Image 1 (tube, one colour):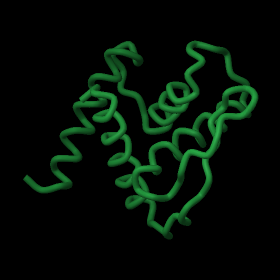
Image 2 (cartoon, rainbow, N blue to C red):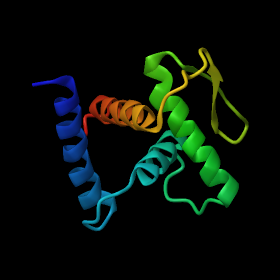
Image 3 (cartoon, one colour):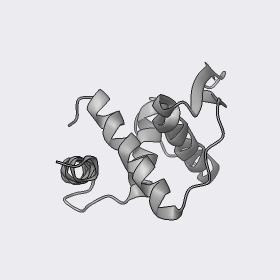
Image 4 (cartoon, helix red, strand yellow):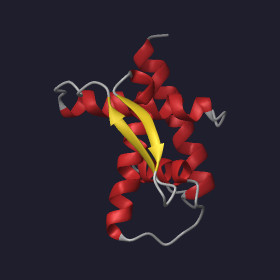
Length: 117
C-alpha cells in the first residue's frame, strides 16, 4: 500500500472516530480538528474561549503538530499555563494541497501518539 493511501485510510478512520466523539456523527473539518488539538494541548478542559484565544489555540495546535517534523520546539508555559513554542526552521513554501497533506499527516501522527488510532 502506498504511503498516500495509508494516510488517506488513517485520516478517514480518524474522522469517523472524531465525528462520533465530538461531532454528533457529523464529520469535523480540518480547522475544527486543529482547534480540538489546541484545546487538548492547553489542557484546561471545556472552557469558553474568546476569539483571540481560539486563534491562539489553533497556533498552539499547529506548532505541536509540526514539532515532530522539526519546525517547532516547545519552549515554556506562561503564567496562564499556555504553551509557547519557538521556531526551529521556517516552513517551506508549499502549495495549498501540499500544506493539507502535511497537516493531515501530522494530525494522524498526533492521534497515533495519543493512541486514538
